Length: 328
Image (cartoon, rainbow, N blue to C red; front, top):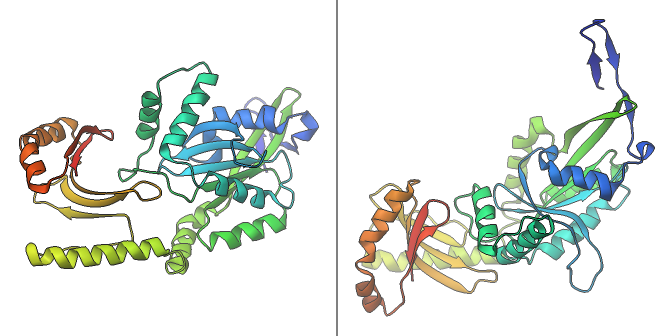
């Protein structure tokens, strides 16, 4: 419950809880605009990519808002004016499935079109820079095929919360936000945004517990392939360069540290679906000038590397925000 305090009368008053329908506040015209303009309402920093997205194949359905979080995950945002109804989570799951095939380039185009519609015309390259600058995940290269879901509503049916809690056990990242509204006076409504699932005070515990329960369940065939591939590759390279190598993880890349902090070798699969494999040298010191200076020194040997490997060497001095890399 929400209370107000009058400094003049020194009295406390309980605010009257209300609903959106009573005030003719609409889902698409009003609530969606709130979230679009102030995504922090949902409890985290989000970059809105587009609204009312309906470019799904063979269906006329449209999602409310599409966003990206700080880790570089796509976020499906589904809004309900008051009650969620019985099937909002199924609706959101469908949208997540539809969006799971979107690539970073697809999202850049969507974001660029969205900005143009809002009188902020820029180039696609600039739109991509905005997205990359927003993402704080240094390992981000491409979108995951498992978008997150955020549902926001005033009331949640028990069928919905039960389904959401069950889906989370299988690695589906769904967050439920409860919007509670209060009428302060004839012209002012206050509302609070509360994370219903997962509970904020137990969030870390719940997430770690879910990860532990699902570590074997979520290990896909692709992840097994990564482990097998890198284990085999390490066995082979040990015969040429005998040293201690880190145990590979079920991820598309494998890093080999150098004796210089911020510089490492990396093997990595790229693209969705996987369409290339890179042998790379990364300069990720956190200091752009240092990284540029270091890669400039390596660039002198570009022709020799190409001659020795019979491969074209690609040099990216402005890779990501402050990093640089070369790869074949």
